[in-house]
Each structure stands twice: as structure tokens, then as C-alpha cells.
Amino acid sequence: QVRLVESGGGSVQAGGSLRLSCAASGFTYSSRCMGWFRQAPEKEREGVAYIYTGGSNTYYSESVKGRFTISANNAKSTLYLQMNSLKPEDTAEYYCAVALPLVGCYAGILRTDFSYWGQGTPVTVSS
Image (cartoon, rainbow, N blue to C red; front, side, top):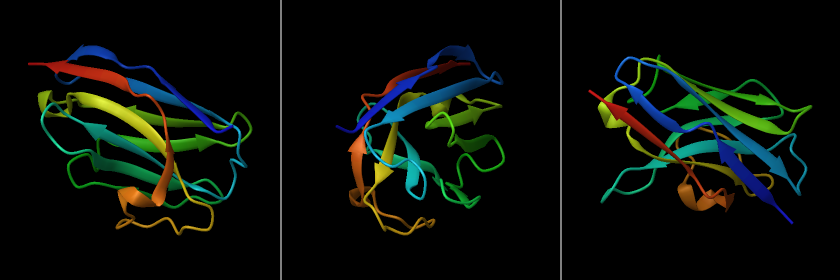
């Protein structure tokens, strides 16, 4: 049974940092595309960052490029999102997800290519 459990969310002031974690189990962690998504109130869920766990390829949305870093620890089957220089517009529920097997990891990957999702962790950035 696939399980993704996010943690690390919280409330910070603008300019602060948070590190999100996503503990994965129930599937072969290596060689998969994994990603972080976020959904703000009354907005659609958007992709923030993706990583291919079998290599070093990473992809970021323009809104977070240079501020967020996605990484994966294969030994621990854990996905991370280091978020620096946080802005109020980063406020959202953050979700990790794993793509279907054999789906390529690239900047334009579709949300529908992700087959399993965590329950989310909230991030609130105050000005």
C-alpha cells in the first residue's frame, strides 16, 4: 500500500525558511518522478518542484526557482523541499506526490501523471 506522509509545515514570517519532508512507503522509491505541489484557498493545485529519484534532474516552477530546493534521500525513502525567502504568496497546503511508473520526469509533467498523493501539510507566511 502506497503511503506518503508530509511533515514540516508551519507558520513563518516573510523571508523565513521551512523544510518539508515526505516519508514514502509501499513502492519502489528509486527511479520514480516525485513532486511537491501546493494549493492555496480557492486556487487550483499547482506543481512546485519535481525530481527524478533515480538521478539528479530537478524542475521548478518559475515562482519558486532560486528559493526552493527539492531533494530526495533514497536510503530513507524521503522527499524534501527546502523553502527559503518565503513570501506571503507561498501560503498554501503543500502535498507530495509520486508519478506513475515509467512516466518521465520533466518540467511539463501533468498533475494527472501523479498517481499517489499525501494528505498535505500547511504553510502560512505572514508579512
